[in-house]
Length: 137
Image (tube, rainbow, N blue to C red; front, side, top):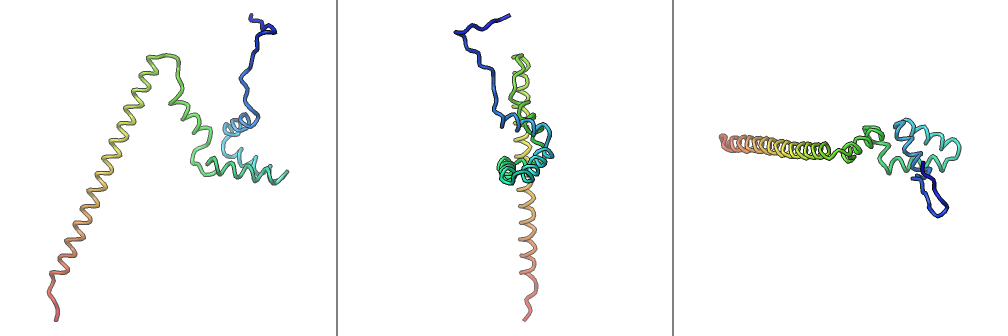
């Protein structure tokens, strides 16, 4: 058991009430944010307006996924497990997947360019045929 003497100072990790409230609402999802905003309008309209502005500014209002899922997905890629072999494997796998995604996006871009070129060539051929037709006098 560790005792703290008067000359030692202990500072517990603290978060402010806003961060705790934001995390709690994120865990509950978008519905909790909307409910908090509505209650803010009901009890004191500037609070509701402030929540609405914060939701728009932080993109919580229009995101397709809930804030909790978005936050946990971000944490999965940056959190260390403490096992250096696994962390190295995870980093290599993520790097490889990012490279595969980049090459797939480049492949799709080449396909789009080829399709655009084929459509343009077809347009030019049709235009040339139209202009070569019999001239009416």
